[in-house]
Image (cartoon, rainbow, N blue to C red; front, side, top):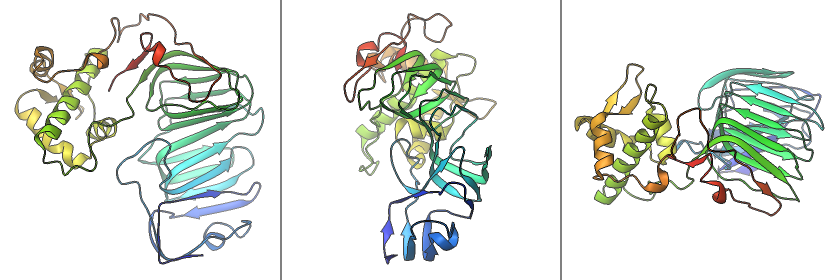
Length: 342
């Protein structure tokens, strides 16, 4: 029992082959809440909250971070319906050798989702969809907020047109194939994994340009954010001149800058004529903004520039990395198709 407290996160495992219905599970204050009463009497444990708050992911953090409610289910053996809820993570574990084929996973918006006997109704996954493989092949398409965990086996895992926040291979000796993907963070390799990574992926920095401890009233802080916004949108325009827009929420996430701070900087850049609003409502850098970047008044760091040929169908070569030691790095391959962009 937890009383008179404020808790950062809870991780709840769902028992196999047991019908479970969860409704209106959201972060916030609980005068009284019981896991057995509110989730399932079949739980082997009972978590009880009295006059206790559960933290919510209000900053839009993504990656390996537990905030709020996190739930783990089995792709084959769980029988669960989650309705009208807001979870930080949903971890879907596949039994040994079981293949995974998932698509259109999104974060930070209510969704309906069905996989075997797992059903989400009007439920939001704020941070990550965990796809935990155990030797079987996987194909993941058009998804975001992915946490890919591989235990053993050598089956290929294919990720297409998706956003990957975290990967974690354990005794995995197969190939991770990226195609038109964005990699938000780093990765860790443990337990004698010998993983090969190939394909086309854009890597983003893990350190935000915005200092969360800052009050936001510093000229230097403003300059960094101005530079970050223009750099981000410049690269987006270079990659796809006809569809170069980006939403404010995506910029907030990539720059690590809260939306309330970005609003001032976006307003200023629009007033100067360096940004423009597209017909779809997204923001893009203007020709004047590109001149500003190229002239060096708001310098775009050279290590964040695209390589020659970026944004075309021509590729310089495949990413390929064999790793046998913990915390292996792809830094040696950054001159291939792993692009360290904003």
